[in-house]
Amino acid sequence: MHSNSKMIEIKSLTKRFGKILALDNLNLDIDQGELLGIIGPNGAGKTTAIRIISCILKPDNGEVLVDGHSIHKDQIKIKSMIGYLPEEPNLYERFKAYDLLKYFGELYGVPKENLENRIYELLELVGMSERAQHRINTFSKGLRQRIGIARALIHDPDILIFDEPTMGLDPATSNSIRNFINTLRGKKTIILCTHYMDEADALCDRVAILNHGRIADMGTPDYLKSKIHGETLLKIKVKHIEDANLSEIRQFKSVENVNVSGGDILVSLNSNHEICDIVNVVKEDVISLNTKEPSLEDVFIQTVK
Image (cartoon, rainbow, N blue to C red; front, side, top):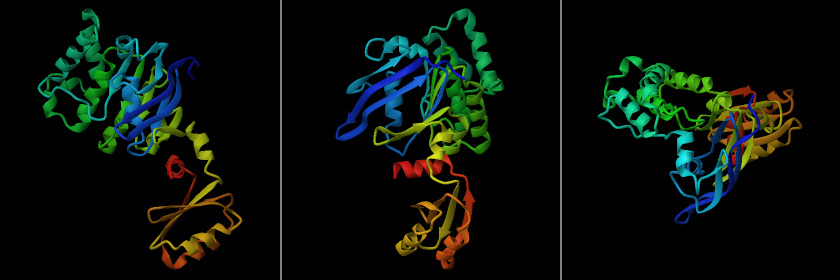
């Protein structure tokens, strides 16, 4: 899938903001051509980490090597290798789409003779060709996000960093942006920070779960899902949750794990033959129930608990 040379090496990265420890001795390697997902609760350190990799923030301690170049010594080189799409791309409102890309292309030193072709190629790629001469301030959030992606790609960087690229977008736009990211798999090294577990599951080669500035768990989506013991997750939505009921459910032989999330009781099972008996424990209170294979969301909830 990708050659195993390390594209990004993060070593003992630490960053504080006042009393808040945003990154706590973070270590992580990302292979060339890998699509790595970073998921974590708000405040876990995701954005801090990618801003340090992108040379926007300085760490208090630690080192990041990008294709062997140090963030402390080779910032200009590193910036030229990275295309970064922040969660709220800061686009110059008064520019037209074409002019914005031209401006950034010149800033990044894209050769003049290639620039126009490159701009039209990218506008085509993100489905914005017919908007080339429209002003940014007339665009919806989804269209701005597409222009933000085109801007991140203008200098054909080896590394792309997307921070919540589909946040707040309608399902159709989100889907087209996910499909687009998927077309870059293996061609670029990509870091994807997302709140959407299904997005991480569908797109990523590996997923790192960040919590309190450290990696709580990491692996392929399938590996992470396999750590939720058992083959079935029984999700019982109940009117109210009684500790006594939870204790009783834990006694069943087939039960590996019982967790609570909101008004749901999540029961991880290694076989299905006691499901009826388990549900009977709370039958007065059941609003709904379903069984499913464990998802990345289940892993996430269990890991950051």
